[in-house]
Structure formats: C-alpha cells, structure tokens
Image 1 (cartoon, rainbow, N blue to C red):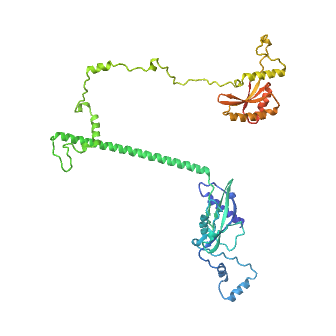
Image 2: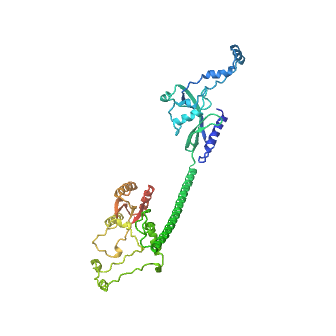
Length: 452
C-alpha cells in the first residue's frame, strides 16, 4: 500500500469519526495500525472458476492459431494480473469464524457487515500488515464452498483510550466500529435533557392544575343553576294545590316534591344558598331554650377538682428554653500523670544532680532552704478512641524513643475519660524532649511536649 493510500484511509477514518457531534475530535495523527483483515467465509452456491473468468477477456475470442500468435507477440512481457474470483451475493455467504477479534463488536455482527462490504482478492495483500482470522470448524460446516473476504482496519488512539474500526472497499468505504466519545459534551447534553424533561413535567402539571380549576368552576356553576331551578320548582309547588296528583310516567310517588330537589348535591346547594341570604329572608327563627336557674346555681357551686400531690408541694420551676453561652472544661493534660510518678521523676533528677531528697515528714528549716520546683517534660499523643489503638501507638513510640539512648524514659498508656493517651516520660531537659518530638513527628506521629 502506498503512503498516499494510507493518508486516504486515515482521512476517511477522521471524517467518519468527527461526523458525530458527541465524538472527541481527532486528526490523522491519531490514526494508527492500518492493515488488512482476512475473514473466512463459506458460500452456499458454487462460484465459477476464477481462471476461466480471468482468461476470457484477455483472449478476446478467435481460433487457436490467433490466440497463439497473440501470445507470441507479447514476448517476454509481464504476465497479466490475475483477476479476483467472483464474489457471491451477501445472502449466499456464511461467516466461518467465531473469534471476537475487535471488541465490543460480536462475530455475527462483523460477518453480516463483511458479507456486504468485504472484497475478494486473487492474492493476499502484501502492501500492509495482514491479520488472518482463524476458521471455526463447526461454523465452516454450515456451507460447502470456502471463500476469503478482505477488509481494511485502522486503530484510533487518544492518550490511554483506543478503539479499532473496519473499512470496506470502494471509493466511499463504509466503516464499522465505535467512536471515542467526548465526555464533557455528553455531560452537557445529559444536563440539557434533564432540564427539558423537568420543564415538560412542570408544564404538564401546570396544565393539569388549570384544567382542574376550570372543571371545578364549571361544576360550581352547574350546581348553582340546578339549585336555582330546584328553588323555583319548590316555590311553584308551594303555590299550587297541597296534594297534586302523582305522575305514573316518571314514577314520582312523593307528591309535589320533584325528583331533582331530592338529589344530595342539589340539597347541599340549597342549604348554601339559604345560608347566604339575610336574616329577614329566613322563613323561621332559631330559638334557644331557657336554662333553669337551679341548674345554673348548681354549676356555680360545684367543688373544684382535686389537686395532684406533686402540684401541692409548690409551683414547678420555669424551664429555660432560650439558649445561653457556656464553657466546656477540658481536662488538663498534665493532670493525667499521677502525682506519685511526678515525685519519682523529680527524685530521680535530684539524685543525678546530687541534691539530697526531702523526706515527706521532715520539716523544712526555712522556705529558702526548700529546693525549688524543677520542671519535668513528657511527650503525649492525641486522644485515642480504643486501648488497642493506644497499645499499637505505644509500641511504635517505644521503638522510636529507645534508640535515643535515654534509659530513664519510658512509655505508658494513661486514661482520659473514655479515651486514651500514650505518654513518653520523664525528660529532665527540654532540649531532649524537643529532640524526641522531632523524631516522632518525622515518622508521622501527632505528639506534643507538656511540662509538669
């Protein structure tokens, strides 16, 4: 295959890929690995001999002598290019392979497409790499006549993303494969689709609300007209004879009262219309019966209900509902270390410096004779939730502090409420404590130095 052909194939792939509005735009530099793929097929009907078809146009007819003289005139000229074997109709071709060599396309899908757009060649192509798809024995048994179809293939690669496509023959080849999508564009399209669906749903609900209000207004108007008609019918019946004859045609057996006036909806409308009329238009007055004086006096002299024992002690204190600022007192970190341990640490320091220890019961000669308070330092971790975690941190801290060469320093676990702290102590010199702190911080531990 010539370089110009490679450029033409790459240009065709680029045009096909960029045709979709949601595809990632590519150039010819993103098209790689252009070659051929040989696909095994089986034909249901036998094809004519390819050599006879190739020789018939070259001989041009005539007798045996004329054909021999024509070959002699050609001399040592190069033999003509053999013509490709005739290709059967796509309906007569059956794919004889089951290998999924171009995912996510399935072999059956590739076989259907190649039967329409693949081409037969007299010889395998040598201008580009060739991929031979293996023939499946079970699939080959479906048809007796073997045939090989050739299609072009190319790969599209953008960074870590890669896909492969198949190209048919002809000046305008058809392409089979998947594109590399542009995710920002697809996200914008999804948001637009969601907004469109939400807007349509809102408009639909608004339309339903207006239709329901219109139906309600028409129902009220119909009820009002029915009520007015019923009122007129009632007035007419009251003005006429007291006992008019019953009609046998409509089946009314209740005298002058019409059937429409006995409908529940019309009766409700009549009650509402009567309630909206002024007091002077009401036919009857509502009278309230008088209550005897004895009943009123008895209600006034009734004893008060018993008071509960809890309420007899006194009124309940008012409950303060409004929030007010407060103060959360946290335990002092230095108080976690017991006093006995502090005293042992101070005694050890005095012993190293040659200062005589002070007995607990011995009186001091004077305030000036008492030794001054000498600070001792410790390294503490943050509060830990469980003791198991504290034990793991203590083992790590002990392994980091031991190589520093201070034999008096030890690590302990001290409780702090529901939590735990790991403490390394005692340090009689702040510089030593800072040095140990820097070692622990360099290993990723969250610690601090405290004095006591």
